[in-house]
Image (tube, rainbow, N blue to C red; front, side):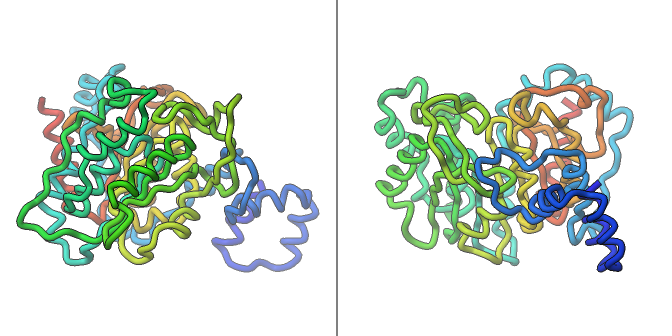
Length: 390
């Protein structure tokens, strides 16, 4: 198959011309060009996903994190742990994980992030930012800066979306009502950038307005708003211009009142919009209504500098073509350990494969930590063990 031939060429180095001529004689030039476009991640107008074949999927699976051999391997779950996971979750995965509270991450920033010596800046990216409630709190947490005030943000959003009103603006998981991160008084502010990427035109316009009104576009710590979709390739996509704040719009369901918006792979987005080209991406959050895997597929080298990822798993969008363990195995190869994320609870997915996962799709959330982040990784694994005791 084309992708395998090209992958072998990359792995084994230059091959003799007669081998390439033979491959070209077997495969049509059109197919060859298409495969090269997939590999290079070049622009595709109005493309929802470049994940079209098993070869494309296998090509991604072949990638390994540069430090993968230096990282600790994840131990397989014991039979007792597997039994407890099944007992606690069973057919209730969605109920337990659809609206998580990432207490482990907040505890890390309260207790441990300050002791790091490798960097004192923060980079956060929220793909599918919607009304920005989680993103503004992540900015507050990561930069320890009170100017990222969720209460003021909520007030401004309510005033700017009058057609929705306070009762409906709370969010599917009532994010508006979640308490904001408590500023650490004896710790300095950190510079950084929090990216809020939102494709719904009406919502993105209000996000821009609120950001400027609160002055979050100034200084060394900023809240960046971009009207764009993020998927597996660059181009444009027709997105439904629904009522501002609506959460269930995605690139696969635009039938009327559509507006063309820019679309980037995650790699292209980071290259173009993230100002800090050196420091780690501390938090990457993905909530794109069924197309989360496409975002990861287009991440390129971004995951090499990412420490922590949250994403949704679903029964809609492109998730219907994949299973949760497909993604978990790929991320494991990149050095990440993944967990079902619940309310102050974690259930490990990496090396804990249940038969149920081969067929189950549903609204749920996953949290992954790169194993190079020993403190956070240890904290999350401990919470997993403690969760099984409850």
